[in-house]
Image (cartoon, rainbow, N blue to C red; front, side, top):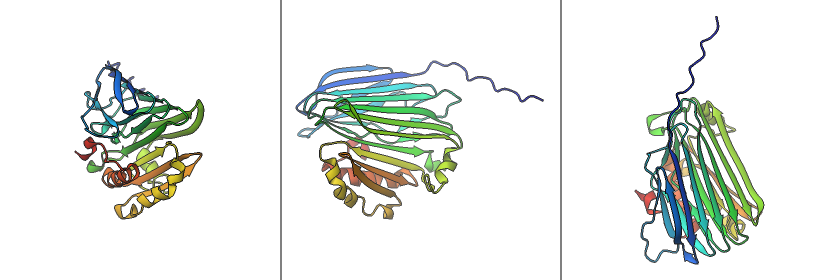
Length: 279
């Protein structure tokens, strides 16, 4: 007897959200142009005397559902300084087949600096999402990226029995590719993360990448800021090569990972984390 073929997923009207920001320098970025579409919005809380402007992304849809498409573009002029974050954790909901896509692109002119610090992404069981981050940097521009991912709603004990998560990072400096990284999980993600050689039972991970001038020379300082990670239940390590510095973190949940991330970011940047992180 032939097995019944499941019906195809129903066609739905999905969310398409876009934000495009153009800002000028030097100093704290000054807004020159802003375009918003769909459920994505940018807000700029006042921070008197701050060294950088803060831009907070708001997704009024409340998360990413099957087949949604979202994108952010940030273009910083010469010497502009901006911290980009999000108002809350981004939730990627269960999908019955369609893959959601998130595409973020940044361009930094001479002397510009961007701190890309969104709050964590939470994948629900059977989530399906492909995410891409591309950056084009001037030779002396600075970019610091922090991205955290939580595999399942750990407070509920949720394990990803089936999911797709693909995360692609590509960074070019002066037109030349200087960093490329791809993380891909597909299938029983919870079981994959349980393997000692993959996640060792972790349910949350994070990557910090600093491509600012002089980042490679800060390796010892970065490792010092990671001291005590084990006491929080987090495995963490730092490495540096080709002028940039990378930090990886693995944790059983977002609580200990966030605690270490806040401590590290505040020490490394000598600035407080965005106020929305403290809510």
